[in-house]
Image 1 (cartoon, rainbow, N blue to C red):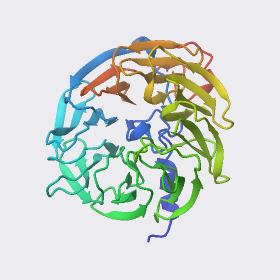
Image 2: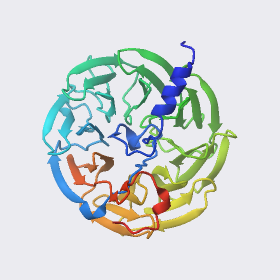
Image 3: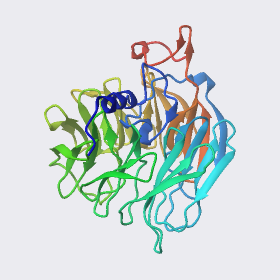
Image 4: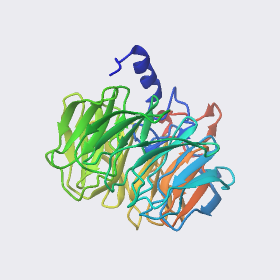
Length: 406
């Protein structure tokens, strides 16, 4: 094992900033929920007066996973099941034109992509024939094949890998676990066995990777990023079994905590005491948490609800006629949320919807563009520019919530 170095820690500190550095608007949407913390937070404010449809294109008849985006390209994969179809697409952000695409044969799954530097990564499942489970890497600009690395798996599905500091962290293992792969070569750095669950991805801070899994030892695992050793864990005795898919990523908060929704509960894991700080419910919580501004944004009984991150105290809520689903994006003044057929922008000050669009999909934001990755196989791009104020771009000034949306 390599010794932990000052350079490693410094690089991790700089690259795990949760999607922002010195208050600047992030240049990419690299992984699930926008950053290695999986917070869903974008340090900007959208100018709702300039929202407009840019393009909408059919990629497939299969559902589109949450995308990765950066450098004026958006990368999308579709949810396949032993189907030999075109399954990974690179699309021009401005025009919606197809730049390149890939197919992988009759593999069991093609999972969501992640972006790091000039490379796109994704995991594909095995086939009933000779194709093994693979982590694949492609040049983001050209689509040229870079490398692939085999890993152990059965027939699982995964969320996008989480990439930081030149390392790809991903769900995998024949009986469940976490891998760390070198991001520049076909090399496995380590593997840690964990509870056998799929449909999750680890969250990262500068030193640790966090995995939340269930039976038969439900816990939040705190894993040394360099060695792959589980150094600590926080048990979850209230875990409610509902199949062998987690369907979530743990989200790192700003108060030495990790947040998650499981078994209709909103849970705060306290990293300072290695215990559960609080859990709310079980009471109809669903979807993926987002966290920003010392607040937790969670779907409860189909409504957007907002809770104090430190104490778990209820703050406010917003609802529409149809239930909200899936994951949300939080900016400095707004929340982007969706139902099965409509996308909404809710103002944090007025607690009212200030924009809606009659289409829906898994949400991502990059290049002044809101992406909707639909279950119907369509990818939609909405012009969603960051607001320009008299003193420059809005970049993380949460003290301006009381001002009117431009």
